[in-house]
Length: 573
Image (cartoon, rainbow, N blue to C red; front, side, top):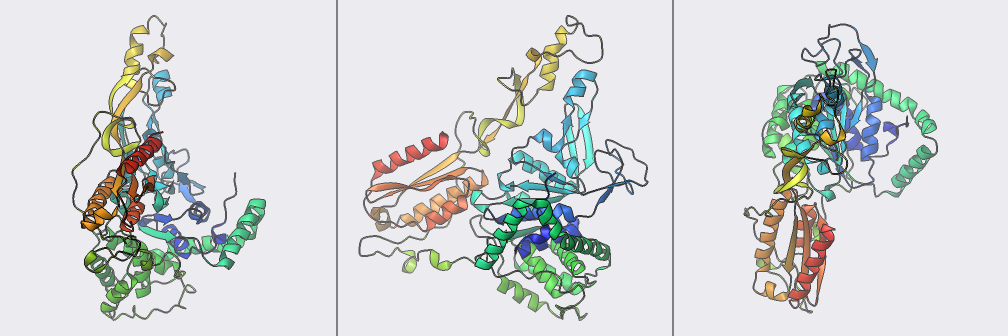
């Protein structure tokens, strides 16, 4: 078994480590979404967390990890009598982006059904992750049908399977951790809200810290076991602190003053629903327990807001995530002293030895406003001496008409046009062409049934041959390539139409974002055409390119159309 990289050996990334530890202290916080560029130790930190979690007691032989002190009365392997169980390490189950629906929720055990004639359920990843961690790398690339199943399980704490004559319900309470690179596309808002906390990570720009990252990584690669042994004392200390914080958690007091600050903060940032308030309350309580305190302080509420609200505030899908810290401080200041119970005098050196790490003002702070070209007065473009013109401001986006490709395609899963897909509703059955991927059980049994006597069947199971197998045909939705071909010549800017064109394209980009399409951008101006944005699912990147698009020059329409044709052909191949 591979030795994991020690959690305490991760350099920097204070917010990421804190968010993971808070969930280890209080799984009710609801999980973590880690957003950031590639190569920032996102997956390393998540995989290292499982080694710090306390062991769990389970009913021996139960495939659904029932707690022996309070077994699930509807467990498919039950009923279990309360009693002592066996200890085992907490599991971290990885959900691959390309996993099937059957692998996630479980399905009928086809082998036993056909060979023995009995209905038997084969558990999926949700059952394996119960009372542990469910980790989804590149969660933004997860297929929509799997996202829907995750939403249901996260909301109800249970998984329901109704298929092939099998009806099963089992508990599925897990710590959901996802990592993603925003450049590869955003998450659906419904799934985004299911993550309790979110963290933005970026590589350090400090040479000394980068040197230490490389030094530790090379030492781990040379001798994983030896490197882990050198950090064993730190790992043990953190593990003990997690256990102590869990024991202290029920004693932490969340006063009325802290609740008022939480409610005021959520109202000030206009978050939808009440989940943000609940998550902030649980996070602030976990912060106090992690610091070894029994009272929630104002600093706990502030830190909880920074972790729980950035992905919940109302914003355009193309707006950068984050929280206005000045506005946060003003809101908390307005409600300071409401309770008079001393919560507003935090002692940074109080019980717990300083508590949580302080997030650094790193590169994930605010964006550089100087990077975007300025428009002229009144939103009009400014001309330069070479007839080159700066970018015009886009008009307000509007609701677009639904566009779809006629017929039935066979593209990647999405939410726009009809398509034959691996996932979706079953519309029929056919003989498999190549390897069998989705068995249509009823059609297979129907094909085999007339031949049982001729094949000498004598037991309860069916005699199945290769020719009897039937592949399920399914119909769902596919994503499409939305390719924008934009005339960026001077004539467009002269007629003050470029702003309207950008507004229309941004509106279509918003629709493409919601329907999980890929987006490309071709511009033509002067004497040439350029692929300003190769086809990608990161529509926010396309929006940035469009906003900063300069204009000027002639109108090489033919060149632009030829470039668009080549771009579309490359995307299809």
